[in-house]
Amino acid sequence: MTLRDSLSVPRTHFKSGDHLSVEIAWKSVRPLPEPAIGFDIFDAKTSQHLFTTSNYDHQISFSGISGEGTLHFTIPFLALPMGEYRVQVNLYPDSTQPEWWSQPEDQLDDAVRFTVTHERVTNGLVFLPVHWGERA
Image 1 (tube, rainbow, N blue to C red):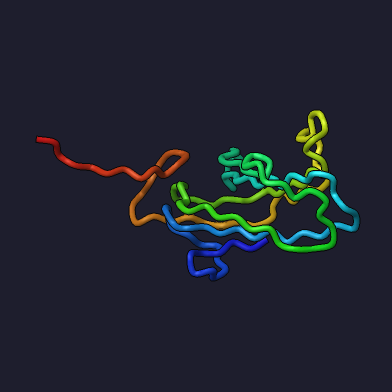
Image 2: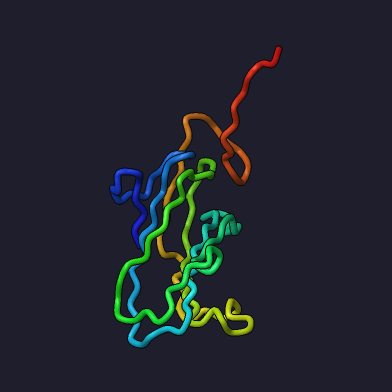
């Protein structure tokens, strides 16, 4: 797994609000019926689960993939405050089956770690863009 910035440069240090690009290399010795690839972000210190996404969530099918390749997605605004984070990646071979999410076929619990910085101290679980102004 590789994390990249908006210029496609591999990085493990980002700022709150940065563009984050994710590449997940995969290899399968057999065709997978309807795989779901899960991507989770956890706080590295507390293990609090902060974010999940998957191709299933976005109704993107990778039906019948086999061999090897790289999957890619982007997070255009990294809404995380300062801190250290770890990524977990899960592979579910057939998302058409009942309770397919209950048992991954493969799991990388600590696939990559990254840090987020900010010019100022931030608190909370997310960093949301806010525009302050005065109303007359």
